[in-house]
Length: 151
Image: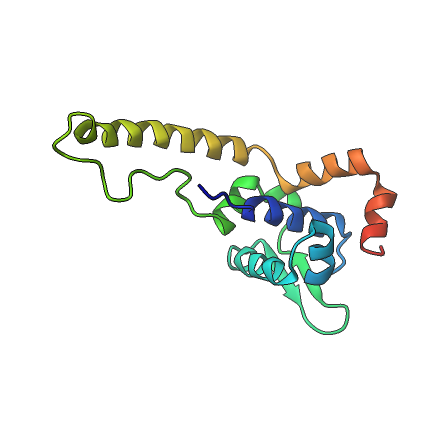
């Protein structure tokens, strides 16, 4: 089973932008911070821009910026912008309808997984990018963060 890092890296991207003091930050700089490929960061920035969470600044000094205050961006917004809304999947081909387990398990799992998805979404909706940025600053210190992006 594969897992996605899109939510984690997109949160990293938005936290970096929130901590950037209004300075446009390049995808290369963000990629170095996240220890990932700049092309992956650019794809995430594209998804985040479509969701109106980021905007781009062209030209010298260009890069990405937050499109709205970090207090108004929740982890749920980020999740919806970059990840598949289906957290869980059922049988790809469907279970055997002739089996008493197979013919009954799908509606049971659908109910349980819907409840789990709602719980995940409730939890993600309670944390903002501003909250994440504050927690990073408390752990790392403002001076260390400023050095990362030459602020």
